[in-house]
Amino acid sequence: MSKQPKYYQAKLWVLGRVNTLGLRKGDLLPSHSEFIKDADFSMICLRRALDELERDGVIARQQGKRACLVKDVCELPTRGKVLYLHIYDRVPDKSILFEQMRRFFNHHGISLSYASYGRPDPELLKTASGCLGIILSGWITREWVDFLKVLGLPLLVCGSNPFPEELAGVDCDWRDASMLAYQELVRRECRNIILFNGPPIYIPSLHILEGFREASVAESGEFHADRTTEVNIRQGERAYHAISDFLRKQPDADGLIVETGVYPLLMSVLYETDLHHRLKIAGITLNNFDDFVFSRQTFITFKESVFLETARIFLNRLETGDHSIRSFTIAPTVYRPKEETS
Image (tube, helix red, strand yellow):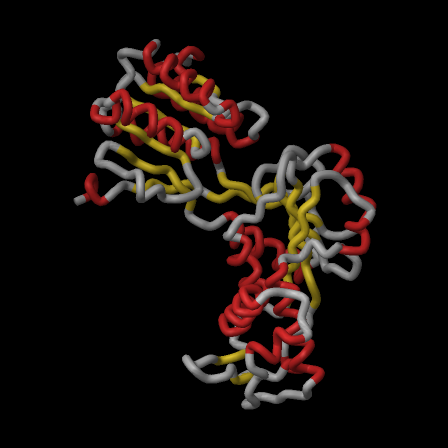
């Protein structure tokens, strides 16, 4: 069974149909009903596929008219394909940011396909056949490392990399982000700073704790482990109570650093206890949580999208033949809400 998204299969089918019909630049495409007649996907998938082709500059559309081919299929770049492999521990998960990476590669004449597996599967050997290389993310285990090495393809990890001595990878600099968050709270006159972190099985959490420890020692000359707590949001109500209990044990806290995964649940606790008026917060996140921002918050985000930076680095390594085992990091930056900067 194909692991490619349905709309992506529809896109390939449309391109194949255009080629079969011998359509050239300037020709009109068949109507939606004609396209869907012999296809095994829905009208929704067809519209999504046409949206993708329009963004790629292959077709042009006007309301009420059939799409027009603006680039010959034979002119489309054919430098090869790259596989994005997501390894999941519970259920498949495809980030919408994958589309940023896909469009980047498409612009450079390379197609990017998506596959998601929970454990090594012989089917992947066929999926990866003919690929220039593999970008992987998710829950990478020793079993996966050994399996992927058999393929003999260039590999690059996007995000957390538990095997940095064996796999090249691109990740955000969570350690520096944590230190920057601490420094921001000190700048805002906080003296009793606490940390809500993710569980230690989550690699960024380990780096966030390391940065918090270093910043604490640099500021006060000591580190208090009881100023930190690990929250597993998968525990649901237990995680909620763990946050509440920890806050009660820190009555003198005036500054709070929070890891991105814990953030939404923490906000619920703070609003219900009305503590958001007292505490100054520095959230470490891949995104700007504009819907949650109020005047006493600061966010530490990153200067580049990890998806786009991974795509750029992977393309450069392909073009230069660089197969070295290296770790690339994306530097953090401070994002302050308008309420604070105005």
